[in-house]
Length: 334
Image (tube, rainbow, N blue to C red):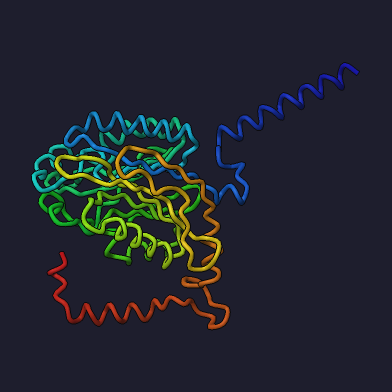
């Protein structure tokens, strides 16, 4: 009898230890199919202290901790949140505060992402690691494994070109919930090719960081353009905007998360719009499988059951782009 009891106790101990080891080795190994689709996204309305990188980083960490405590998996901060945005008089400031990625600020944040098990997308000026005289308006991506990389804005806007150069490639990062595409401000509003590229590559979530000012008609422009990106690609879009006074300009916040609704063509707000006047963290728990279900109704990138080909005519677009390229001095686009 004592032998049987010892065996039972031994089995119980080893069973508990096995579970602990499995959880420690692979925190996502126990994910169900549903869990692999459900992610919590936090978008931060952030008010920068223009040119004060040290203070901004401290407050960014505070928001990362707060969002993680509330269950966030992916946390977005606005365009150039690390330094402040304004570019007219700011070329010198952005270059002086630019860092390589990985670099001092992203390495500090990586300590927190490892501890908290979250992903951060943060706008910041980046200094090229290959050429110290080249700078980018970038989105740094940091995750549980550390600094993942950066997306350099493909289409810098207006005065941004006083200090930064154009990025050269799209950027996605892998997560337990699938690939996520990254874009910055003007990239998204006026160039729908970028989110479409990510959707065709399998991304169900597009993270958009921005420094959209309070110009006349800003709100309809902001929301309508991102709703269009969500509808045409049948994907979730998360957006984080600056709020309050930067250097001289005022930014209207209104961060949000949108995605496929219950019926075709519907876009649903899952979180936000947030405050137009103050700092705020909004969270949305979303099921990315909704994007898959929508794409089954509209087989843009997969086989249409009737035509047996995708609805998105890639071969035709290739010919159309080539015909434009043949008539264009591409050197003007560098």
